[in-house]
Amino acid sequence: MPRDDATSGNRVRFDVDLANLPPLTEAQKTELEALAALPDEAIDYSDIPPLTDAFWANAVRGQYYRPTKTSTTLRIDSDVLAWLRGHGRGYQTRINAILRREMLAALKKQG
Image (cartoon, rainbow, N blue to C red; front, side, top):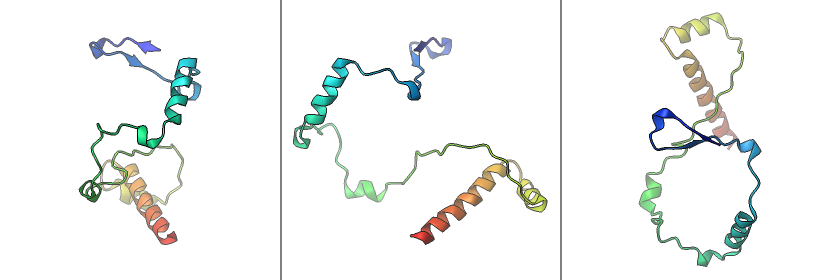
């Protein structure tokens, strides 16, 4: 449903509940079926630049991925927490970074 936002100028913002999407219309279903029936050779890729070896050489995995955060309770030794807090603001971010580093190392070992 559209939402009017005084600071948005001429833009219209829509909120979408992904868990409760409206059903497709018959026209939308027909269009999707026609697209699905097209052979790959019939698809026009002319407006998409080719992905060269140079592109892949500079590609970065997960550059725009931002994991969701989950609130949890964690029991941690007082001296460890004091050490983390002693480095200034962002101790929870540091805890997450340390745990992520260990997780990635363990995953790498697993193969």
